[in-house]
Image (tube, rainbow over all chains, first blue to last red; front, side, top):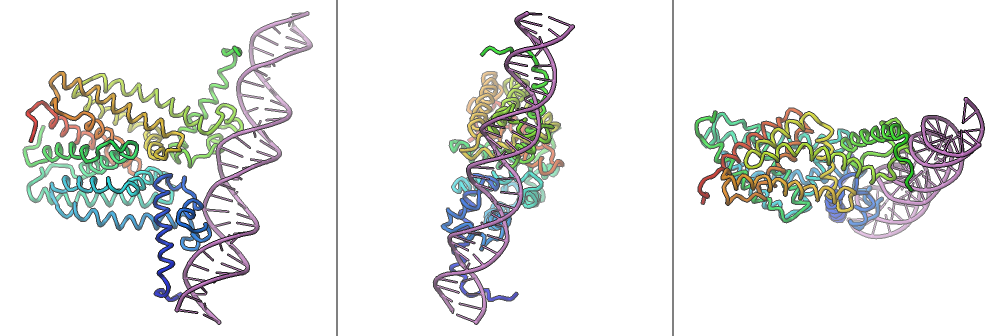
Length: 205
Length: 205
DNA sequence: ATATCCAGACCGACCACAAGGTCGGGTACT
DNA sequence: AGTACCCGACCTTGTGGTCGGTCTGGATAT
């Protein structure tokens, strides 16, 4: 049970990280199903058995990769979301631009979120929950805009949040296929229009 | 060579269609990699060997499924695109609503487009080409709006098209996870804002 | 009308192989 | 001595695909 946790972690932690990085890359390239433990292990400089010593199953490895990125994502989201109000929308743009420097990360989620639509996929629950969490946070941050009077009180923040997330997810997919696609510009275009449209003013129609 | 083609096509054509339908469903549920020929054959009411008699390989089956949907897609796109100008944007909404009645089809493409990001995926070239085609068509249809004076001439139609496609792709993904997500409303929200924003008026800033 | 023929449809047995995972052991550090 | 690390051999299962064969339904010849 209470084995000494704090002993020689360094070595194990290193290879564990190497595996995590390799897994991240290969999952991003080929998806969960397309990537094999053998490939991942090879890229990490370990045998498959060595890999399985640190992660008991492929599922477990996936979860570990997901959890790690979860933390990173949260850190990145704090910025834009803490702005509150309408600035959130423009703040998300920065996130997109930031993402465009991290091909693997973008690809990882774009690929996995689609692959995980299968209910029996080991990432299904995670991805479903992630969408809910994202939406809720966005709604929360945007609702500050209503309190401040920046955003029309009759705005449907649920729908708006869904649309914003959709835009980000979708543009990333195109970007993976063709890096010439300007994610920032596309988001900007919509973001400006939305800010304009959602601004305080008499409800249209 | 010129074997009699018009003889007993009916039977073969029937099971071929059954296979195509089953493949469509399973590819949509589990992706190309996740679906097995055995499963597909079973759902189609044939053995795997029987399936392979009609389609020589899994790749070939995928291509067949894709090509069939290609024709359907084209038919659905004619409507919105023939409107030309700014009406295209509002016309796309109808397409989305229409799609919301066809779960399999939506899921098929959402899943496959992400899975096909791998360059070695048999659907890669198809999906890449599909994006280009979609964008080009959209740009073409929207440019009519500029000629008509409905859309600002300085509007970047490439970027606008990318954004619209992204929105559709992204919202479909969320919808797969949670059918409560209102695709029409989300698209509407953005579409209205965009039409407003892209309308003829002096260039901002 | 009957026998013949043949292409297409379909199946069962089989194969090579890659997948994830188990197990027992070896090594090194403490 | 014990524990964490890691490997090699092995096992099972599922995979896409091949091959040989059976059956059937019509076209053809007589």
